[in-house]
Amino acid sequence: MKFKAFFTQDGMNLLDKRFLPALEKMGRICQVYLTPNHVMFLHGLYPEGGDGLQCVAQFGRDLLFRDYRISSQSDNQIAFAADVSLLHRALRSALTIHMQSQTDPNAAIQIKLVKKLPVGAQAPSPYLTFETKGLHAAVVQDVPISKPLSRADLLQLQSVLDSAQELPQTLVQVPDLSQLQSLVDRLKNVGDLLTVSITQYGDLHLQVSTSLVSVGSEFRKLRVLGVHVDPPAGHANLSASTRTQMAVQRGEALSVQLSMKHLVKSLQCHLAKPDCTFYGIAPQGACLTVIFQYFVPGTRVADKSISFYCRLPVLDQGSD
Image (cartoon, rainbow, N blue to C red; front, side):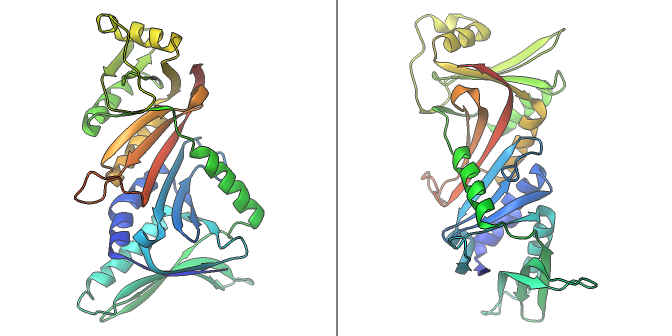
């Protein structure tokens, strides 16, 4: 089992400034999944459990690395668990040395899997090593990782990942993130359970209800990807709750209930600075899916080398 590669400049910046800070908010431990063509950071998929929230960040290998080499007996795939904060700390330290050596054309940061014998141990342990060679210094940092997954475990991980990639039939582009964050900050002070409704007309409805009060907000005529229909005549004259109930009854909307803490946590993914964000409810109300989209720099064309999304577990299967 072997893996080694050199970071690209874009790869270092993306991980340091965007994705590792976001992943740190998801949880302390993540799975790093390396394949011949992609690099993935997974939270909550394997082993299944935790608080139920799943998060996947996938990158084309050439976006993050150059001279990428990987081999294993599991179809050249490797996966292991690592502490996100330790990964981020090692990368930042390596970047500090690298920045001091920008005039050196040979300056680079290499990352590789190694086995080393810890002090006092009788057997070697796996590490992800960051090796930085600069103009005035060379630094080697070892980040401890779990034992890489077996072939059987890798197959199970891939199966869970495949099931997590199922898209909702209807996705709506959420409004300005600061506006949504402000709304959620108000709603979380009302209650712990949130009802989310999404219609095929492009409406997103958020509501928190308690025995004493019901507070909600609606975003209408949002951009829709997937199944999109026009609202029925006279629809605009009805209240938001009535419109939503009618849309659910007509099979033109889905409604689910979820934990407010999960939505608040998913909003931390905005530290990765997506260009736009879509919400959708999976078939049969299985989960709330949040998809973060990125554009090729300087364009409005989707960057297919980056995929980032969350799946929020539901507390109630809602209506379908």
